[in-house]
Image 1 (cartoon, rainbow, N blue to C red):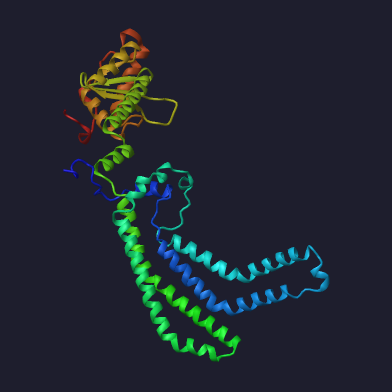
Image 2 (cartoon, rainbow, N blue to C red):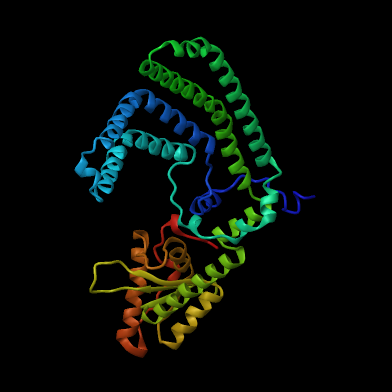
Length: 377
């Protein structure tokens, strides 16, 4: 019943809904994937550049204590040294900062690509609603967060115990080594342990990333009513589309009727078809159909023709042939040239000879119309 009533979200999100979600900043993101890449990146950076970073930092610290008697009594000396040391420290740590920044960006865009949404920056009062916070404490998202926390704790605990168990002999031997060697050895063990512990996040990210994509798609699912409403909004309601089509047809009919007074002749069926033909003797085009219609439109064409003194000729075979073979503003087909030419010649004779007209009326039943262009009905 819930599904039939359109309340249950069972339909896959449409492209329009996914696009609108991206515009609002709602895309699949895995914090665990980003954390994993930052931890492993920083561990690898420290393993590669760690010794040189420590050496440079020690040099900076050593230089800070090399002060002359004059420097000690100079009030501005400490500020100058502070600025210099901070600048040098930032430069020394630059590789680590760059790798962390690259890892953070790569982890953020890995699932859904780059997305900069200004709408996500707008404040939302709904985020301050405590009821929404309570809702987030239950459901698949909360269960997944709890599962990830337990998984991370178990993995880190297991890896930590394994590392301590494996490095126990080396840790016990640190006391027998010279201090510089012991410090370097201890730092190396800490970095490798950090890399091993960070690598456990790979398993968490492998679980979390697919879940975040699935959960994001689940949250954007649509009800049947939403799908129907989106189709209506996108394509327009049938009533509106019908109204638009009717308006377009009315405008086209008005434009067509405005051309009837300019026609040279109206060829009729005489009751079912009317075709208005215009021929520009100074141009290089064949006669053109400027208006045509059936039934009530045909009657309207004849009414306008009578009001504007446009000649009307009853020639049923030719009217049907022209109507079915030629669209508006098109030249008549070559097969009807001779028949239409005879009609126009007869009309010109009527116009030029006055009331007495031609001595012999035009026999419209004998007009030369090809068999393949005849329409009996």
